[in-house]
Image 1: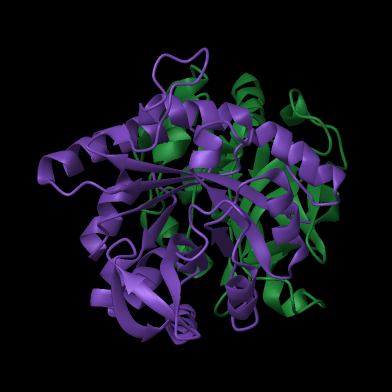
Image 2: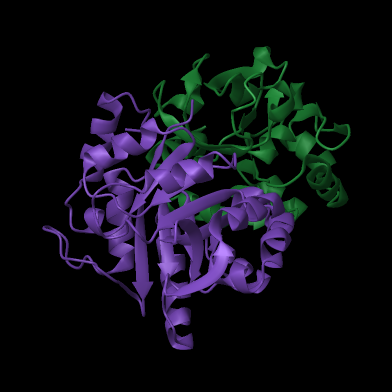
Length: 251
Length: 202
């Protein structure tokens, strides 16, 4: 059977990894290329690259870096950030991305999900959602979690999958950065509505949080950034621990 | 030199990079002379079977490929592997190259456990059922990366390795000098690189 996946996420801004720190034995852990190489060797099952650059120059730099990363990393690569059109899909796929993640771009123009799925296949389209509880309801947020769209998040997800999203990144704003476990209530709600793979994001602080995540039905992958970057959780160690706890892992 | 057949299907970035990383020279080409001169051939592919087969036929290269696989190794990857079979039932019935006896069928239709997700995407363990020089550097049970909704069946004679996903998925086939992998070696980390290295040494 297929394994559960552990995915480090690299937020890249103007050519540098944000929240990057210096690891022992590595020159510069804020360099995305070096960091990607490190995670590839550390046993990551996939990498996610988010371009959080605002400027045009920064975006060109990101494209260069992406090409360098993709030519050295032989595991699946998902790229997101600033994806607003089919041209954007095309641009990052040509640089070696395997999947493209859309978030705010799909909120502005929901048709992009279906158009991209038709052109590149469902498996290529990842719908990433930032979600927060507002008066007891899960609401969809835009612009990196800063703006409440007023859209019911669960409705949005169901529609996105119907339109061709082949995978979901569910990022809980409520648990993000808290490091006290994934938002299992939200994740269960999503899993009960769709059958595409779910990548859980936001809240992982320790190995046990991942064991707990994968005990829940429909969870395919756990994504995190800073706990991996700071080595608070070591990926090899984590994957071994998960396997000992009955979770199928690629070691 | 490895000729990667260019017929307008798929993204070849990772395949080229992985071969380069192994020090294997490759060229994406549709030129008959270059394909004749190559030591080996790779047939890549993503997308739908019928469409890809039509594109391949349209290049006019099929008779040349038939001739060349009597002399040198060919590796079909993902849809490229599926094209090696007799036929596929993906969106209607389509004829394949017929190098590997068997057919391509729908995972969704054949899976008894309907809770299993299709496409079959992710890392799955490879079970080697017949030893082969292609597995020179790969051990039984290593993980490889799959992305597909259709799979090869009725091909037991040619099957070298399989993976389990509610049913037995054909992972690697071989018939004569023609090999095929359903998974993507260029996305299967170190394991995939070692498999490509062995292909380079055939």
